[in-house]
Image (cartoon, rainbow, N blue to C red; front, side):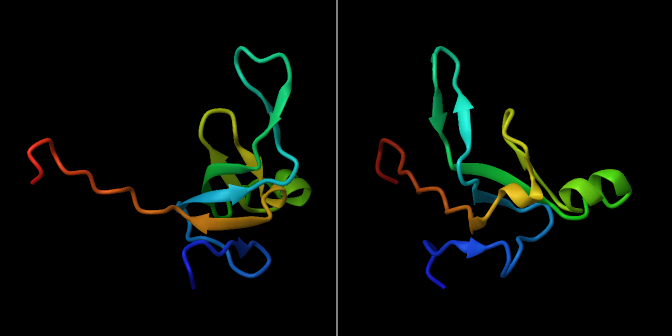
Length: 98
């Protein structure tokens, strides 16, 4: 699979605790210093398998799994449609070129 192919949550889920890029269709956020909302449909999320397993009311309302976000970007399971493994960071050479 090419690294740029999004995976549907209906087809496969990440490993428990795995950080991924997640697609949240229609996700709008109010950013500090802005007077209006901006679309932010791709977020960095961590998949939390069976997060609500011990809370039957929340599991019934939102599903057993959860997406833990960075900052205030937590998402209920059904909000995320697709995910992609985090890409590798680039390798930087120091100033001497080694």
